Image (cartoon, rainbow, N blue to C red; front, side, top):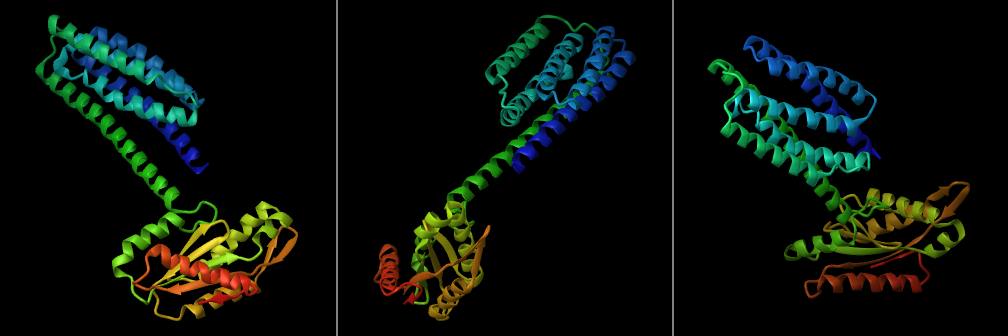
Length: 342
């Protein structure tokens, strides 16, 4: 929901930015048309001023898709007029290239927010064909106006800065989207969505990474919630989810210097390299959970856990090490539950 709100604000701000940017360029090019006597450019600017003013109204009314299409059309049309009036030397053709990044990113935003996708392939084809046609026209036709070198230099500078700024802006936005998406995918791959703890994949990857540095100081423990099926059957799965989150929170608070992971279902794994006796830490966790009254809606619940733990032995593989802790867990289950077996 937060990402959707961000994207909505972004599409509004970008569209408004371009609407205002076009009004600013209208004023600039109108002055150029007046100072250097280019009547066609002036007439086009008058039309653009009306269109772009109306476009600001559309943006404020949240007609983002229509407004974006108007912006594309206006910029490409002015690119054509600029090349016809001054030739290719004034760099008006750069607007066609600069707008390609806008099409791609705005198309992405429209799809995410408005659920309406811009016809990307069609718009790119129009861009390429218009760019090629305009460039070929300029190669075989003289510019409509003889523009002084000073004006050409001003136009080149303005058009280059504007076009490159557009490209840089959208490349940066794409860059941020790519990084944000990768970070979210990494989080989804390594973090359990329900409890916020690391998941099985993270634990196994951590063990593989630490394998060379493992020593007898390391220990691993598997925690299993006793009679968890009864909780789900009696109070419902929402209550079961609440218990899982609360147990995860207590485990994280009690085992501060450990890696706490959700192993699956109602099982958690705790990995530590602390030299302190794991029995003391795990007993503290067990008693804390047993003494806590869990309140879900109108119900109060008492929950116990059984924990099996094992120190690292270099003769064991990671899988075997986990299996030893798992066997001790089931020993505790058979012996009456609510205990730590080391």
